[in-house]
Image 1 (cartoon, rainbow, N blue to C red):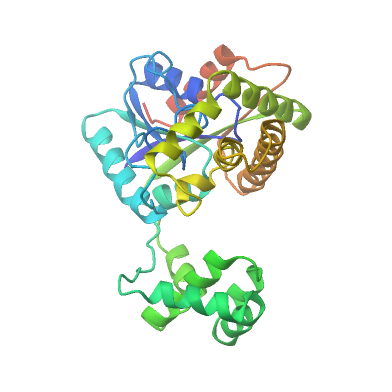
Image 2 (tube, helix red, strand yellow):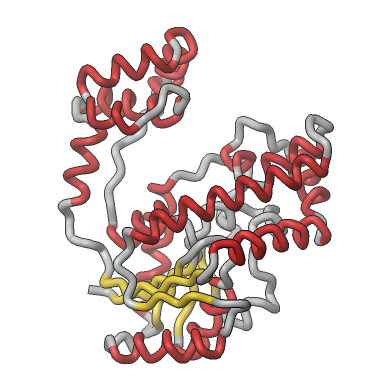
Length: 312
């Protein structure tokens, strides 16, 4: 089984820098597991690494899609696995770097995805949701998939529609499909390394500082450029944390100071969700920063674990 290293952690913890250092030290290449760095023209707000920051290390799964197209987890899993296999076939170490837990799980575990229909069924179900409302749709879902219904909220239109779509397409509930998938062996033999802060307040402070830095580097101008490209609220890319708020500021729907503060709040909330996912991760190495990151120490500890595990 192909061996991979997964370097993950909440937003703003230094994953990019350590990933580059590990690739240089261990003879590897980086496969990004960031759900928004896949989009072109979205550089500042996704903290996409610059050519200088990549340090000459090849990065995969960055700038692979237009912000105007819908990019699914299933597509990521397929394309990222091809990148991992290519890196390994060339005798290099695939290093998966990012904080998108769903993307990482889909790639490492190799989970299959229920089919999607191109005949307009989803649009029909969306229209049903709009007509019936979330409460009624949830009641309908509970009749054949009570497990999924317990997990979902009436306002979660996207997931409610998806659960109904899967059942109507396959005759199988989304819960049953997910359970079957969980029983499959993982696609890759993964060694996990996680980054974080001893004090969550320091993490939140780092997130706030990074949002301010993004603004100084032209985040608002980037949002305006995306509007000129044709990005609208209906596009998946427009739902990214920070972009939703900057787009609102760019169109005059929200004062810029409010957009900045909301971006910070939602970024902190996202970090909290990432921490919840990480607690379920069987990490071989957990590195917690104190006052500030110590990359030399992190590189030494991580490399020792990778070598001891026989990955290099």
